[in-house]
Image (cartoon, rainbow, N blue to C red):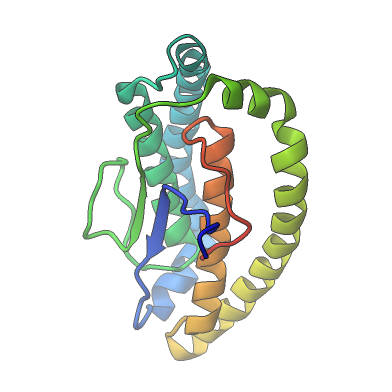
Length: 202
């Protein structure tokens, strides 16, 4: 118990007691239009900016051991925005995502990551040179298999929502855990934390 890794990455989706069948069909057939195009274009540009910021942050960490707070917050806002879009398109919620990544406790998808006051230069170099080996391979293989299962569960959940208006709770928890695990791996590899991601989505 004392060896349990506590990740600073926090991701949670409020369980919806009911979901709209009409909204399910609308986003299935037209989500690419009213979600994918507006959010997708902006997030693609945002992602490019985040890639540049991350490159600059890499050097800042190397020389100072600190991820500049303004840059950190800028990146976290993109993650939060993307997660909200994922939550909506994955029918975890019927609430349309805002066009921003600001904190909002009223939105059913919540993401946060504790700001690291200091980051290890050694870990920075290690994950840059060997992250593919000690993170990418073990987590990548397991998450790849988990992702296949999650997609199948999502497919079953789609039909459940269509006929009952409910996302089965066990299916919901299974898929949320997948996204949580993936976010923790991403946060570690994107320099946002030095806490190695646990092999779990709990």
